[in-house]
Length: 94
Image (cartoon, rainbow, N blue to C red; front, side, top):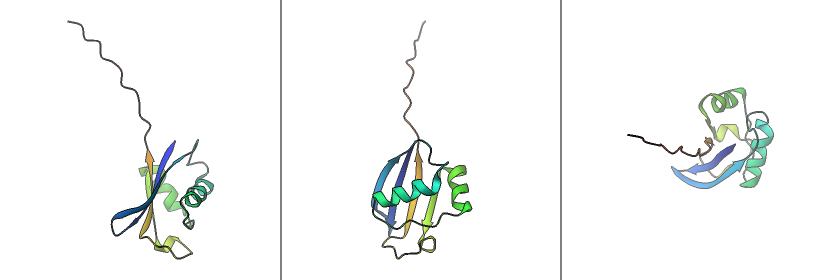
């Protein structure tokens, strides 16, 4: 499973990462902390609402109020990246 994590400031991406894990949903808090560590930002406080949005919509935003420490971006966004599936060849017979 791949997760695209990105920080955005004034509608521009300032940092981003593709984070790979077996299952982001089951270990949401620890995976979030590891993702934030990889891009060198503070870890936000993840509530049930954040986890619910990510589970239901495959995307979630963490804003200033979700961080205890000061941040230099407007928000952190996590988005599920679907795996590429190989297209089946169509055998056309006439």
